[in-house]
Image 1 (cartoon, rainbow, N blue to C red):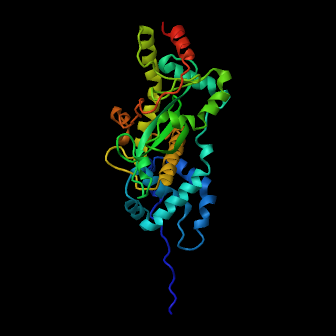
Image 2 (cartoon, rainbow, N blue to C red):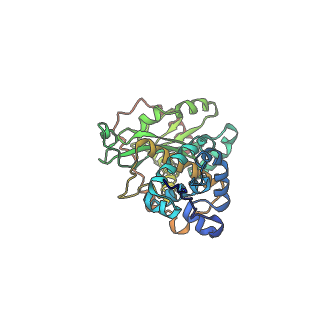
Image 3 (spheres, one colour):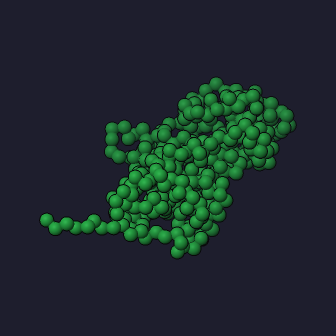
Length: 338
């Protein structure tokens, strides 16, 4: 039998020939950040480059970035990168697994020494003291593989989704993300079963709070709006609370605009729940990296007020509220909003 040399992969991706603006539009990161990101994770991806047909780590990472940024089909992105759809599917899994090993380097709760700065930035928004984060959930729709328990992913609006809970800072940095719960699960349940209660409990000696909507219980470390304000002071508090909490809604809008793989209207991710979770976390990592490196947002994709409406909060009446601790909220209202 005649021996045939296997085809050699010839990359179609070359950052050196692209303008900076086009790089940011295509990959959502600038040239220097892309190169550093690829260099950082090259050891995790080198195992795939053991023969002439192997795809260089740079191309692997850039092709996945292109997929996340554009929201295009795998086949389209694969052709643009010079590979088959099956090859890109393997690359996507490989890159997600490699980068998620480093999640804690990109998504971290602020250290104690950073708290004065964080509190000051939130105070400037609504004049509520000691806020260190805004928390909320958003539904990310996807089409789950056929299985017996697929109904648990059907949310209160009757489509399949993951209920993704995040905490953000005033500069829209994501300090916590929990993307493993089906859409039917209520925000308050996700919060109770996350690491947030423990983390905030450890910080209570610093008298700090998160802000959340009425879907959450008001706790000693979590401030929510007054459901039925009866005084002008309570109304002023609710207005200030809304300005402070709006940062998490704007963060959802910015994240979904920066990475258009997130379905905004009539599209859905066609992946297993595990891979959807990986994609969400990876996009949050890249979002924080873009903020840290001050990568400009592509002008044509800049989010507007309409994108904030893409956030779909859970109905606060879906779950019986647990016993609330309103002492801190009442003290704040009396001291700052009378």
